[in-house]
Image (tube, rainbow, N blue to C red; front, top):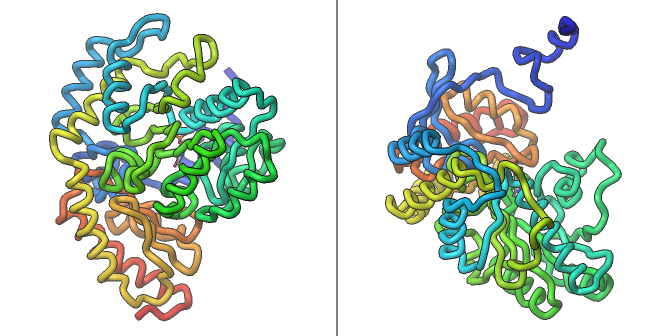
Length: 410
Ligand SMILES: Cc1ncc(COP(=O)(O)O)c(C=O)c1O
């Protein structure tokens, strides 16, 4: 074996053998309990991020842990050569709570979106559209594979990876006329693909009325409506899925993140128009739908129901919003607070990535997205007291940050 190049090892910081693809904080988390995390130095943090909307049930949930231990002992993986009863169990539950008709399982958000894109293209080909196009959105984020980064509306994510995949037509969010114009000018469109609340793009909400209009347009045009609920879905907004606030159903719904409470999982849930588009040999994955991930999904949804976590998320979100609103009211430099339920963005008037480390040093895990938006995505098991603690830590940090960087905070 060659000795590692000391220059490279040095340049790569404390994880020299891992590719340098993330801007990491100098913190190594070792374990967690509920909404609390501990690092290798024994410091404790309140988890306002939930692994970026992944840890639905927090950490070490007393019902999830024994179920996963049981599943590990029984079977972790088996090939999709065989029937996997837990896949059927999870698919049936997803159909029940979404009103859709069937699910395909994979391992991540981007994989769920890749499957959605393939479904849209195949749907087009089946209708005789040889070069199908999909309407996508400015500031969207759908993942980092070549196809999903092409659908993503962020030049930073795409730069360096051109040529991008063709077949996407981009429009601004919440602008029905823009989609109507595409309908006139692009006869090959087969689907509209969007996040109900854009996560990475800065917590931008799609208006309910807009969703209803796009649903109608999709029906008129024979397009698929594909709603990426990878980040905003699974109870976070106070309903199972964020689109349910608009009283509509999608034809295709990619899910991931919160579905397995931390165990990697992805799913594409399809309505009647899309459920039979893929057949044997059209799509597949080695790990997708493995018994461990399926059990994690089944148990996550079961515990969410049993413990009333969706209603709880809505209630505790009100406490968090109220505490943040009160603390940030009138603070110069705070542009807007937006989002829904436990998916919250606080836009500042300047880049605020520095707040990540400062918040961690103050004992709170947060995220910053779209450069200027503080993002909170705590586990759904957050208590009202923990919600108030998040605000109590975050508000003074924001005030201090804004006063230091030029604008006097009130
Ligand atoms: C809306 C949305 N779609 C897709 C993805 C990609 O998911 P993954 O990182 O699991 O590939 C993300 C990740 O942040 C996301 O927020």
